[in-house]
Length: 330
Ligand SMILES: [Zn+2]
Image (cartoon, rainbow, N blue to C red):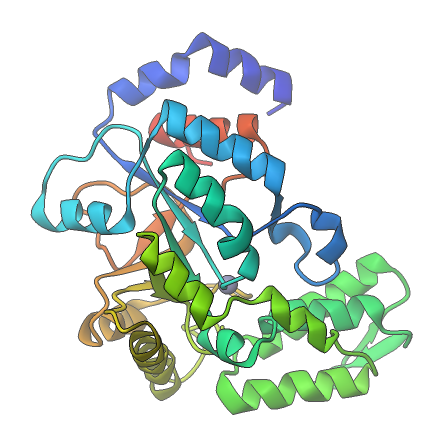
C-alpha cells in the first residue's frame, strides 16, 4: 500500500474504530541498535540500526499516544488474567549493543518507558559482534571474487547483489551451529575470504557493568542465548546449553534472576519449536519472544510471544501498530 493511502486511512481513524471492536492486546516491539549515524556501521549491522533521532521520535509518540508497560507487567497479566490496558506496548531490544545503554536508555528513562534487553552472552563476555554481522562484514569487504561453500557451491562476489546471496547462503549454514563449532565456522570463513571485522567493533557490545546499569534503572535483562544459533536447527543438548548457560552466566553476573528469553532469528524457518518451548519452561523461563509478527492477547502462551516490527519512521510504526490493533495482518 502506498504511503499516502496509509496516511489517509490513519487520518480517518478507521483503524482505531476497528480496534474498538477487538479485545485488549499488547504489541511487543523489536529493536536492535540505536546510533547517531547508522551509516557508519551499515556493513556489519546493516538494517537493524535506528537513528537516534528516529528512535526518539518513535518513543515520544509511544509515550504520548500508547500505553508502554514492562514485560514483567505483561507476563504477569497473561498469567493472572488481569486486564490488559488497550493499546499496551512493550519495548524490547535484541543482541546487546552498547548503544542500548548509552543512547537508547537515556531516552527511555527521560520518557518513563520501561524496556527489556535480550543479550547474546558470548558476545558480551568476549566483546565481539554476533556472527551474522561478522559474516556480513567479511562478504562486503573481501577483495576476493568468489567463495566456495562447504557443499561445493561456488558463489560469485562480483557485485553487491551476488554478495548478498552468498551472505544468505553462509547464514543458512552458520545458524545450524552453536558454541565452538560456530566459532570454527566463522574463523574459517574469515580466513578463506581473507578479511575479518576489526577487533575494535567489539566495543559495540555492552559490558556487564552496562547491563547492571540497565537493571539499576529498572529495566529488564533477558537471554538471547550464548552464541545466537537458530534454536530449532541445533541439537536438543546444544539448545539446552544455550538456554541454561546464558541464564546462569547472566544471573551470576547481575545477581538477579533471568526469566525472559528471545529466540535469535538469524536464518532459516522455524526459529523455535515445541521442543525449545518445553525446554524454556523446564529451565525456568517465564516468557520467550519470537520474531513472528503479531500481537499478544490474553490466553496466549507466554513462551511463544509474537512481536511487531517498528519500522524506522513514526508513520511506519503508527501504521504497523494501528493495523495490528485493528486485526490486520502486517
Ligand atoms: Zn539477534
